Length: 147
Image 1 (cartoon, rainbow, N blue to C red):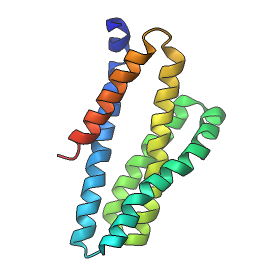
Image 2 (tube, rainbow, N blue to C red):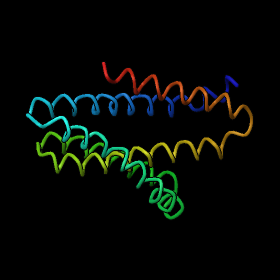
Image 3 (spheres, rainbow, N blue to C red):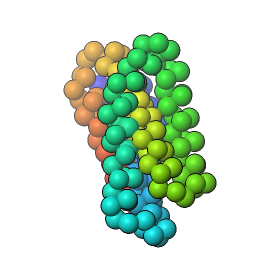
């Protein structure tokens, strides 16, 4: 068990750092939208667009993984998510932010899907415990990123 965890520690660390950034982005966008004078309804629509992206990603990402593989899909989704985070600072417009949140939702779901399917394929023993560790790291990082 310890040997398995040490073999995936870089994956857990990378995902933890990435999700901390994602948690921070979600918090900052809501606050920045309020500072820019967006109405509460518009802020709610912008923030909920992330989950529209989750739903769309559940349709598109499995096809992408089958077509180009885990590594390329992971690299593409990580790059897209990073670019989208930077674009929020360039365009302070609720319509643009809404679209960017959808794209970010798709890319984050793609990252989750790649990591979880890879873990599922690679780990045959202690799968439940490894997924428990993975989810603990993920949720702690997502929560810690908001501070």
